[in-house]
Every structure is written in structure tokens, then in C-alpha cells.
Amino acid sequence: MQQKPYFCPNCRSNRVKFSVISNYSQRFLKDAITGEVQEMSEPAPIEQAEPEIQCLVCSFVGNELRFIKQAEREPRAMTQTNPTYM
Ligand SMILES: [Zn+2]
Image (tube, rainbow, N blue to C red):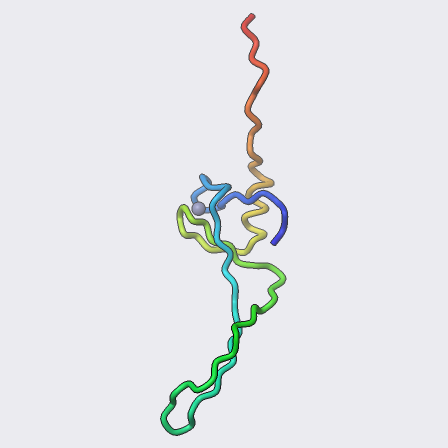
């Protein structure tokens, strides 16, 4: 995952709460007659160039780049901290 701001391109209200969707590979041995699973290996993550990200506000799932691009298009506005009263 990249160290860049995300912004959900679907609901456009979430920059904070996300989930990363990972694919895992898990080997197992099956009994040829009964179909019973006999041995299960530890799950091993499959390396992905671009992870899939889910927005936890609207449940939209998309490639990480879509969230990054949306954040670049609409950067978080800095709050003004120098009010003038004149
Ligand atoms: Zn969303």
C-alpha cells in the first residue's frame, strides 16, 4: 500500500476508514474417496502490485489508485487558522 491520502471516489465523504482486500493461497490435501480435507497449510498472502481497497462508509471496492487519484483531484482543504477581525 502506498503512503498517500485516499479519498473514496464513490461516496466522496471518507478519507479515513478503509479496508484492504487481500488474496491468500492456502494449500490442502483432500481424501480422494471421502472428499475430506486432511491437511491444511498456513495461508500465504499473494503479492499484488495494486491492492484493492474498500471504503468502510459505503462499501465501495476499487483499486488503490482510484482512491489515490480521487484524493489528488480533491485534496483535503486546510482549515484556516489565521482569522482576521478587521
Ligand atoms: Zn465510500
